[in-house]
Length: 354
Image (cartoon, rainbow, N blue to C red; front, side):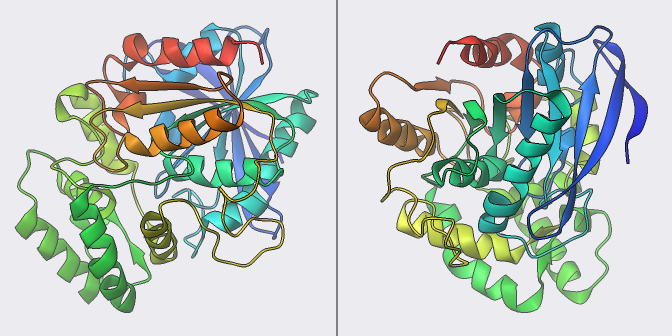
């Protein structure tokens, strides 16, 4: 099935979008969004991979210039992946292992089939990044030759209060609900949802919407946790209310283990994935550009610094690290000035020869 629709963007007018379903390795149905501008691409495909509890649309905030705009302007063929963590797909108890083993290899293969390219670049964010990197180091993404990763990859490092929440809140919340959902800030349908909403209202008094307060409670430490408030324009703050929804406790139980181990660990005992991602030599030749916001209150910039150092020790001066002051977690993509401060650096990394 190939559904083609048109969408309007502030800076680029009308895009053509093709929604292309693909079946993950275990049968879960995901999809790709192929973004086409007014002219045919002159460069190869770039796959964008979102984080937890959001969707592929997270890369298209209502700002003057999005990362999609920037890629199209440079002639890239742009593909957005909705993997099983997407809020556009049915809620499910996903893990990073499932995404690494089943979703990302199938998405990359589908892009290769659709475009005819055997080499693909990727821009990956948050848990899209951790799971994609898990897949890459396991040797499951041989077509990917360049990776731009934002926020966190193999070494999740969080602030002390996030460690407290992971240690004590995750086991408790797991007993009362299988999911968290920032939409509970607008409507809490169950007793556990009402309880969590009341707790969020009691503890979060920042000048943010109810949904954004739940986002900060769910994902990090701070008021707000996922962006610097001054980096977002008013339209983006309103738009964000529709961009967060269900995220399963199965993910939080896994990332809890990863944080306290100091690196990613698999939890499903799949032979195709290393139990400890840093004990085996990575099975990828991809050049990796690590990005981090210095003010990230979800995953500290140290997360990317540690993984960069790990890869740099294996292959000196091949990979790169960019830590940007004045930026946090998601404002790296949706900040009002990200088109000036962040995207040119990411494009430079995509264009470097391997």
